[in-house]
Length: 388
Image (cartoon, rainbow, N blue to C red):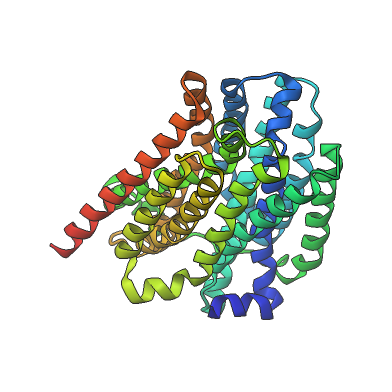
């Protein structure tokens, strides 16, 4: 809990961490209105999947550009600009009158989402190196906390606000104002320049030990993205929940347990080790997916909580292992694993959309269960190879 105390007592650490929370406050509010947008535009799951793929395409487009912007403008300025732009752009998908404009708007939202994600992680990494502190895991805990705030509070007030754009506007104003207030702690941070010699050493041979970690990151973060976008529809379509308030609590429970796990993850990892923690996290999430597939309301919502708890410790440990990989710098290792993980996070929602079109959302969540099993098996073999 030392990292959490650090964040809560000093604005220098709270400011960047609040950007993590802000990003997911907006996303958590947005996911509540996905079913309504789907009905308003009269589109099916496959078409919604294509629209979400446009979001992913925007993100992939920004990946090579984000580092250039950070180098020219500074990581602090880029982070503030990105989170404000991201928040304001997310008003557009809620009000668009047709499907084409939905796809176009989500592409631009994806651009700003990627810039925000790269900026805030680079900002935390820079501060960690300057101050010789560690609060990356707790910052990701704030990301999960943002989902609880956005979807949790949103699930309560959605029954009182009939116009989606008004609800989104309140969320956007809150995020923009709070970040303008806290940004003074990091706005002037420029970031460190990359070492050219390290860049030349970046090769296929040097990143080979990271392939297993990369696959796990793709599977787990892909499952996170799928749950974030499809959990409410799963409760409505498969579990037959009719209440808007209740159908949002699958994602709320998932985010709440993930937040709790990430705030305690560092201490648990220190005691048991990274590979053991990842295997344990996979086991907990597998149990959770079986509960989700029961299609019983209370059991299903509890299942989302177990999946969130299991997933919470996996991604931080993957980053920790990537940072220790031999023959490659910590920054390169983390960026390689995180990049493919984020790719999975973005691609999984449209993939599940197509699967639900073929069969149902139940089939999509069976695929997520299989992904957790595969991730556990890969981790087992990586751990065995390390011991040998």
